[in-house]
Image 1 (tube, one colour):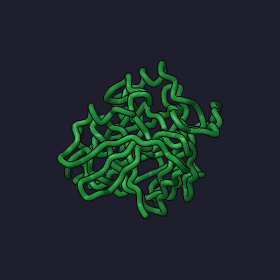
Image 2 (image 1 turned 30 degrees about the vertical axis):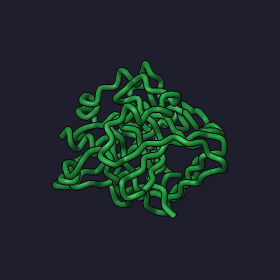
Image 3 (image 1 turned 90 degrees about the horizontal axis):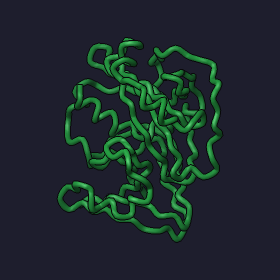
Length: 244
């Protein structure tokens, strides 16, 4: 199931703004939230984490996506105590993916669709909101390369990167440009936003791929009008494809 883990991480790196799939029942017990941390006016470098239980039904994997944004900043001491195997056993899940810590890189997000709704749960003292329930087929977890491969994600969002901020891009051999939406402290727990300017020196880029950092002269809006194409580099930082 390790290949499924990797694929899930690739597809759900921005689960905060995914659109829920209708007709799939949630299975994690709900709680009344007691934690609150208002979303800051500027989300850049804001820390968050996700818990993603996977429930198998025949050849289908139903994945619930839970996110800390708006409730807390994923307290490090509590996050370190979470045990994916224990959580999977507790909730009778096929597996549980612990996706984080991560940090947003856009300044503002506007989301549409079902992400405004959702219930709340407590994972080891960390409260999270369910923002999506998605489906994969088992064979999708082991097809293709884990990194530098775009995945189709159903969501409606606008990420706004403010003028004067630095952005980090991957450029494919075909000229497609992907903008980093979050950096991860999963592979490298010590990675910070200050390391991203020269991150290309550390990445195992495929042939003819390029990494670049640049400073914005004007605001950049990265729009997903129902569909986004998202990929990860080999440090599990996440990027969304720029579209006309």
